[in-house]
Structure formats: C-alpha cells, structure tokens
Length: 204
Image (cartoon, rainbow, N blue to C red; front, side):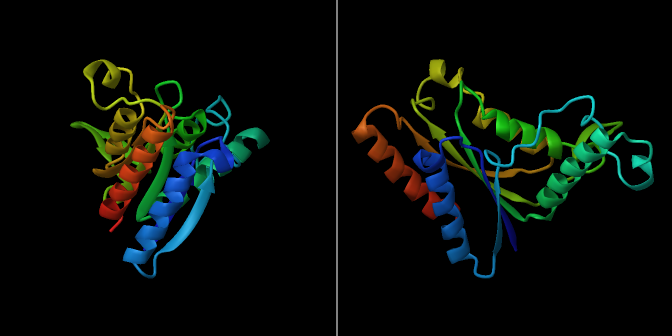
C-alpha cells in the first residue's frame, strides 16, 4: 500500500495541520504494516499556478512542438499526476486560509485535475477516473465553523475538497478537524484532543 503525505501549511514547525498529518500517517502505518510513505511538502515544492505554458497536459508524441517552458511545466504536471495516481491513500494537511485552502494546495489540485487521466467528460456527464483511493484531510481552523449555519456559509475548505475529490472519483474522504485553535489555550487543547480521537478512529 502506498500513502502520499501532503502538507500545505506555510507555518513550518508552528503548523497544527503538519503536527496532525504526521500523527495521522504514523497511526495509519501502525494499523497497516508495510505501508510505504512519500511526503510532498507543497510549501517547499510549490507547483506554479496554471498559465498559458502549463494549461495543457501532453505526453509522448503529443508533446512534440512544445516550447522549453511548456515542456518544463508539462513535466511538473506529469510527475504530480503520476504520484497521485500511484497512491492508495492520501493524507492531506489543509489549513483554512481566508475561508478556503492554501494557494499551494490549489496549485497541486490544478495540476492533478487532468482530463483523460483523473476525470473525463462523457455524454452522460463527467466521470472520475481516480476511484478507489482513501483520502484523510486534516483540517485546521482558527475559529469554529462547524456549529452554526452562518459560519458554515463562510467555509469553502472542506466543502471544496469534497467536491473536487468527488469529481475525480474519490468518495472515501475522511476529515480530522482541529478548529478553534486561535481561540485561547483551552479551546486549542480541546481541539487537539478531539483531533487525536478522530485520528485514532479514521486512520485505524
């Protein structure tokens, strides 16, 4: 079994999601001996945002005629989509930045959402091609967004990830949530304790 461990927080050692993704991966390995892990740190190795040079995904003979810039961008996209498709399990650290996900994580998603590789359009609509994977999203939030309708309306982090992963065919999406971590020491301790319990349940 192959596990892809993705971090996207820009906070380094101060990151709650990095702490919890490491804990999640360790729990998964303990529960699933023999799992191999590859780590992708998107704060360090951030793919550039989509541009005219990186918009197309072309392989082999289809890559003929690309400019050097297009070829380099194509290689980035190909490396990331191959890494994604090879993984059986993904653990994704996704802090809430300005009501959504980090731009680094969005850049990765834009690279792996490739027509003909991870999804396709048919006469009956879109079909995801990356089914069968398990994704554990470690969601970090300074405030509390899950307990009231007004705050849920501001949240475009977990809802977006469910939508885009579902579009790629992934339906086994689990969440470890630490929210309220900026609301004082007591709230932070409670959030981390709750996340630890979720990790034990979801990564078993």
